Length: 141
Image (cartoon, rainbow, N blue to C red; front, side, top):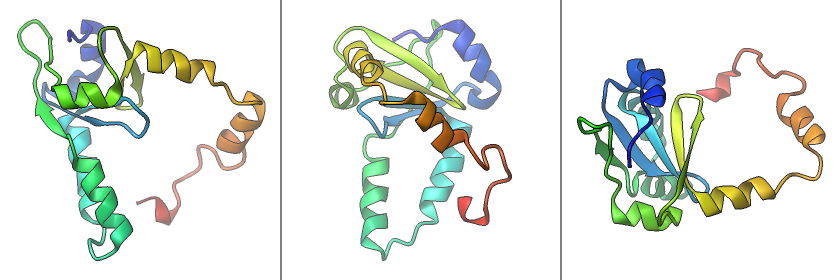
């Protein structure tokens, strides 16, 4: 898959030019600049492995994680197992979100966009309402 040049320029400082691709929370893949992945991985590695829920999360989170670098034509090679997980066969949608890129099967993405909340206004209030943009709480680390 070829990564669009404008997208790479956007991530250039963070990526420099290594990435890690992994399973997303929904049925998509997430392409992390290596620097971002290292920060997330450091947080995951702080989880107490003697708690079953943590062990399950750690195993699932790292399953499929693959380091990669674009070739001279800005192409990346996604492994078959990850493509199967995301249901990617042909057309993909790249969705830049914060400091990472979600890679979706066009069909899964279209379905996700068709599944709108009953009230986007209520969702926006719940997510962005009181306290949105405030300093992170001590528990956010």
